[in-house]
Image (tube, rainbow, N blue to C red; front, side):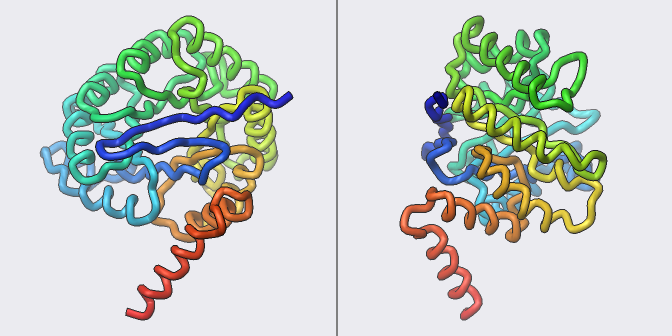
Length: 292
């Protein structure tokens, strides 16, 4: 018997967003991140956060439901920078935020200023990592993204990922009192350029996690196409296939309309867009924009 579908509730400054198997797919806009952006890093070191305003607008305009905020810039006080960035983002939008950092002090700084109910990115199945971050998740009543890998390996086989997913649920729920609905699993999307079997392994994991736990899931949407040409085309195929298996959200750059539209089409075909109203509304908006 399949597990009941869980609902992960997030809140921004002005509203609620629910990640669920029975609702439209959740797009988590990833652009507010300095990784690989030299000019943005230099601006942030100088205390200039103006680019964040442009990034927020672009991600929201592209259809982001949640905004991932990462301020991992070398030679800066990441905790202070992340707190300032989150405060600014919440002044610009009421969308919920995914607070993204590998630094525990930065996560706490971000959670301490956040208005609403955040998603934290992320933990692994490593005992030390869970010991560091799960108390913060509980303290600030947040939800958490969890990856089924440990200190030994990133498992290439689906059964090992499922085993580590069980460990995460067991530890988080029984030792730290985290609700199962607040655990969002990242089943580990891997580059197909290195191994063509990884996409099928990912789909297998997604289906198994949905079946056993009813959990919500996410992934880095661009990971699968890394190193390949035609990355937008691959993304536009990968996400709807993953949605069919049970993926309920993805961290992606929503400035790629080809992928966003593929997700919206899949929502319609999977019965998550009642009477096709969102699809029809978006189509009419595009026609109106062309007409003007």
